[in-house]
Length: 139
Image (cartoon, rainbow, N blue to C red; front, side, top):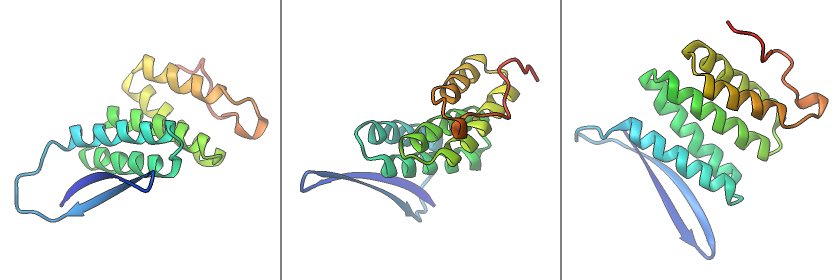
């Protein structure tokens, strides 16, 4: 199976499609493909196509999970949490961000950890605050 994405422009609207194809050819570099999906997802979210961006991030996350690529999984979860936040889905944003924080901690990635912790503190509404994560927790 090969995942392939298409970005189509029709009547002034961008449409994103993820196509799964069965091929007998050698698989392309799935890591680069998934990273491209994340860039596309980020662009879609930033241009107001939030649901399509979420779908691109979810597709990237699936590819990283199949490869057990924890670093890229953590980065994708962070991007996905932001997208959920833009979509108004606070519960999914918090849950996804907590997964990213846990992975960044496990990996010892301080930069990613700080970025995720900062993302979690941006919205101060009580129902959106991450209460199960302490920035002072080291392990």
